[in-house]
Length: 354
Image (cartoon, rainbow, N blue to C red; front, side, top):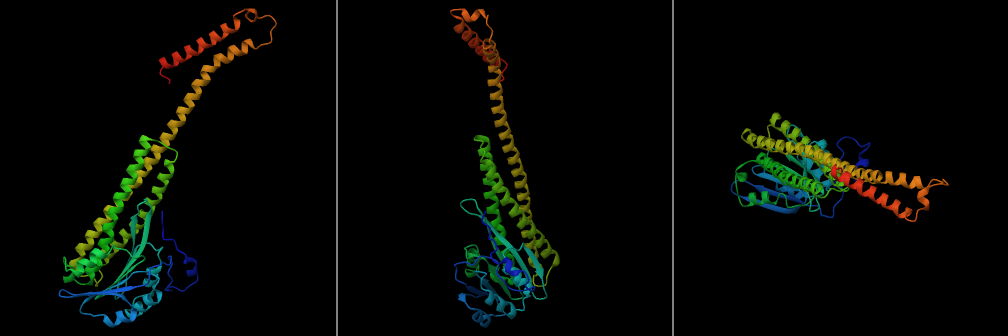
């Protein structure tokens, strides 16, 4: 499982609260900020802007979407935070890629951090840290990696598709969350397929290696469950808090997200039970295989018991044993032993012990 493990988490020890330290892995992607401004009549998209350019172009009468493509732009993030009076603890959590999903509220902002989860072609779980800060006429989004996940949303804004250009920044806030949550459904389908594939292998061709696959997907399920559970709590708090930055008409959309997250969480709970069933099935297969081996060894030992007795009888060092002087005594004993073996096999087959 590919986790975005922290490389600088130990550097945060001893720092004062609100210190901005990026805890992820520095990427080769060049730092960049994009500004999308729109209203019902017009949209403008400006790529690769600096902090100074963004501050100059902010228009309070439009929706201003500021998007950070990477998180290793600490200086720009700090300046943006100062300009919009964003609490330093929110910015600190934005840069902490190991932080669980959460929601926080301040006088002027709503802050939400969550995980973008997906399975790659090798069924390895990938986690990406993302955060959103909602203000009155602006929304600031942060993603750990460059990707095409938000491209459809950008195109909807650019081509004036749907309600997005008619709404304010809080509706964009909803759309961003909805885009990530919808991506969870793809993850759910891939996890379900992976579980079904393991089950088929266990039924068709039981193997000792299956336990490794089961343990691998168990770790993935537990990681996803941890993130989804935290997000579910965050969405519940968001809906119940009813911050003033979100219009009342948009709460129905947030409740729809809440339903989707609940569905994803229940699916993950079902997968946990399925994984436990697979573990039990694998253990049963291993026990059956071991029982079959023991059964075979027991039958072989049972067949050799009378043979051992006969061989031991004629191996005794007595002087007078009439059979030893017979011309066909040796072959006679071999015949008796063969007859005993065939008789034992016939009896075992008849009793269906093998």
